[in-house]
Amino acid sequence: MLNLEYKNGEQYIEGLSISQLADRHETPFYCYSATKVQTQFRMFKDAFSNLDALVCYAVKVNSNQAILTLLADEGAGADVVSIGEIKRALAANIPANKIVFSGVAKTKEEMVFALQQNILCFNVESKPELDQLASVAFQLKITANISFRINPNVDANTHKKISTGKKGDKFGVDIDQAVSLYQYAQSLSFINIVGIDMHIGSQISDMNAFDLAIVKIKKLYEQLNLLNIKIQHIDFGGGLAVQYQRNDKTESDLLIEYARVINKHAIDLDCKIIFEPGRFIMGNAGVLVTKVIVKKYQHNKVFLIVDAGMNDLIRPTLYDAYHVISPANYSNEMESVDVVGPVCETGDYLAQDRTMQKVEQGELIIIHSTGAYCAVTSNSYNSRPIIKEVLVKNNCDYVIRKEQTVESLIALDCVPVFLNYLKYDSET
Ligand SMILES: *Cc1c(COP(=O)(O)O)cnc(C)c1O
Image (cartoon, rainbow, N blue to C red; front, side):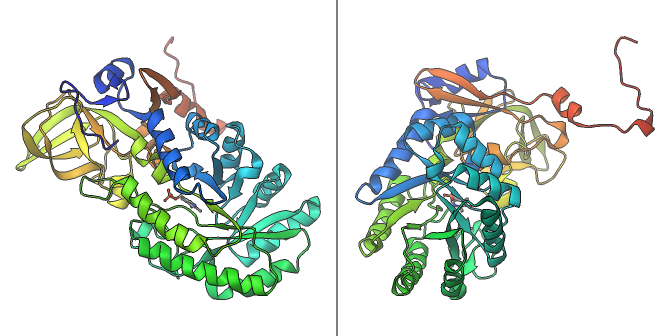
């Protein structure tokens, strides 16, 4: 949450203070606000209430079953990128006819499963993938509904690791080849063309990028219309930014601008619209709560070494991401610090040269805006078990993912018999 208001000197998530939460759950843990998730989803959906639109939440962003169930209750569909995510969506009661399947290389096994479930649409990303899908569909005698994910070759003006709609990115089919691919697809049995799809990247605040891409997609839509290739929906993907810093645009402003672009173009379209927002729904619905284990002064620097590391939150290391950090308890002194984790990597930092409220050893700090792409990208490097996730609704907190245990990690490994491994036994 980018909510830096303190009540009586303390930060809250809904009705619970961070210190109350940390009394009940050992740090580090992710904590989400159920109300914020709902608010974001409703705000997005309402912005397009004038259109025949389906909002398919991008499951990869935060795939916790509780979050998915919360969104299913709001009427969300799902954008999935693996069989695992299809199973998660179905398990959360998101109906198959609201599931779109994205991803650059779907396996045969994934195609079979998705076809048997009768999902809304496969977003196909290449001709070889189409051929594979056609062959699987033919064998099963189940028709596959497809869109092509078009790479419109626009610069999304975002971090290069999350740009996906530019020539040279691995995603989608080249817009110049789109018409001939659609014609080819039309000639295949058990392939049913239903839509056009795009997704140009993530954390996009430059509406011009969306605008340019949509202009190209619309032109394709018109070309296909002339060829009598009927398009039932256009999927504009996800990618809308959230506010990570105080000076960033707010989410409501971003949404207003985005809706203006979409609505301007949608008037000319005689089809349904699909959206695949992810970050926008979850980014500011969660925080990471962590504790300062050691405060270390070295080479004119102050290091806050906290109990969460790059294995728990990799965005700063991977994307140079900026997350606001604040103490759970307000301090009116400021200090310039590096906030780092305990992992044995120099890249293990959460913030560098950050001027923030002064914090002492043992205190709780909050890493803001960590609801999207954070828990899901964590790992157990340094044999650090994946941490707990907690959901708060009003005055109640619920564990929605248990922390892993070291024992369960060890148990996954198998030592071959030739090593004469004698199991360590504390009894002997
Ligand atoms: C990741 C992804 C999304 C979600 O992107 P956000 O930036 O989180 O909104 C949507 N569609 C596809 C195909 C994706 O890969």
